[in-house]
Length: 235
Image (cartoon, rainbow, N blue to C red; front, side):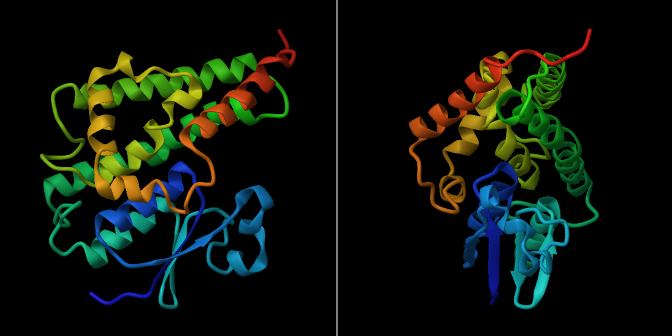
């Protein structure tokens, strides 16, 4: 099916949700890098595409879609007619897929995002916040394990949007010093997904300017900066 897709994105878990979906569907698209470190996403032209000033967003011709979950659902609704990474709308498996997608959007994304912020990006150190959000992230990984300990995929018997969405975040566990070996089913699932060609292409959109080792060092330096601060919690 012909398309005129443009992805506005940056190298974040939510950005990867969109780029992996595009790559798994073998769709042609243009990429506009939105450097969030420079607040490009807050510029007036981008707010016309996403009034919330966040990445990712897409345009399909003149039609806009923002919020990563909405983008994923739009892409499969319009372009995944063979249900390669989705299920027929209205089926039981469809709603199971949707449930795990919303689990990521309402759970793992916000909680792991906050864990990452307080552990590596905050301007002050809060041991309470670090413990709260890292602990909750681990609890959510245990929820994934409750499914993946006995199943290859989150919804039904195949790889879907549900897996893409959760994987895009869980793959970042090492940045939080979380060892996925604590959840063997999750670890095997991450390894399976990481080996997919579409995934390997998707996590390099936009192309990375750092090696994996440099990225690891970047996060380590940010964590160390927080660790060196005095705890600001009031007891």
